[in-house]
Length: 282
Image 1 (cartoon, rainbow, N blue to C red):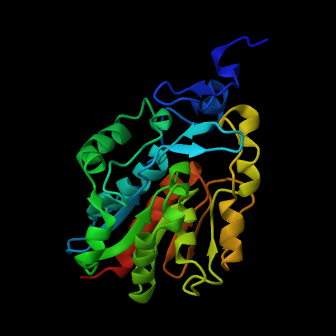
Image 2 (cartoon, rainbow, N blue to C red):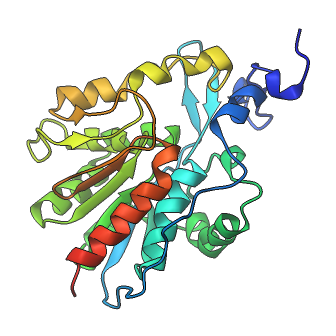
């Protein structure tokens, strides 16, 4: 018998789509927090140059699961906003893009509801999330103005990005021009877009574990299981995922900066900001 709302493990219906669901109240009590860790976002000598960070956001919301239900997803707010917050404080501006040019989709149910700093930062960039640039157009105009690419997490990164030729082109440009790529949680699924290329073969990364994804339907976080495993595909392409759980771990391997989960949002932001400040000089 369910004695309180936070004990309810049933996925919550999303009335905007037939057979679509948000995470259960119980899973939200376990995996989200009303406040965020923003410690260390102090950069007394911020970047003053002209290079920006290219963000590639999720533009699809509904992820089909193995039992025919849809998971109502997008980019996770913490996994998007905390790394951006640090880079913004460090002086780096963003161009927000999606593959389609349609708005960035968010898992708004994961927004830290009592964190005015994070919500204020979301409001600052909301016009860009609402009307992003189309990634193909940005690529066509040239990427020389960018110091890094940022691909935020959230299950929305599993939809479209892994088989996008535009994402492939952006990542190949970053590798060829020795630029940084920043991602966390499910965001590294976008790396699958490079296919059999050797540009990241042998790289070590942090990412959300496939094994943990397989357990989340048990508490109603997703209404069904994923139809494929992004970590398994990354390993076949030569990546080594160094974490087996989620602890907030981050890792740098050459120009690739990654984190394991929402718990890594602040640490990855700090790592990215400090790394770019130390390496981007123009």
